[in-house]
Length: 164
Image 1 (cartoon, rainbow, N blue to C red):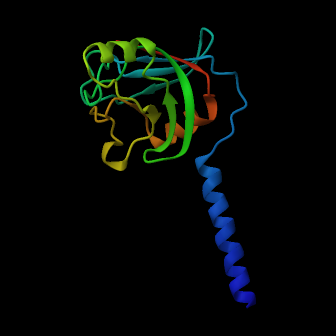
Image 2 (image 1 turned 90 degrees about the horizontal axis):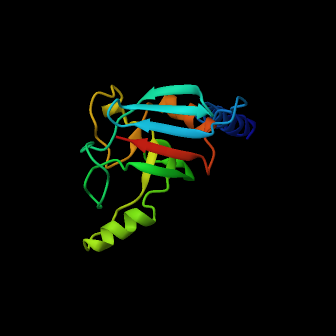
């Protein structure tokens, strides 16, 4: 019986240690905006005019142009904000981007289509860790290690600007 109790305590300790690795604590300057430049495949976490962190990113599998309809494989362009956090993402950790906004919904409706949704900044599965190809359905991807930092630094409500 003691052996089983000791084993359970060890399993719990290792489990909690694993959580500690996934979730970091950030105590630096507030991230006031996330800037994403699709053409250069770069994302910047900003504190006003100061770059706090910069990352190479992967994009939607059809990266040219603004996302307009569900399934087009494009990453949106425009001004959005972080609207949710997902600690149990299929792609490690993820931060939701508020696409579609009112203009995106109106355009899609005008052509009788759905604008799509569920656009996130998230980690990369092992098959795409090299970051040399665009593979998402419209999301922005960084490495899992980078996503730990991004997830710790960026809060819900943070503005996100995505440029061509």
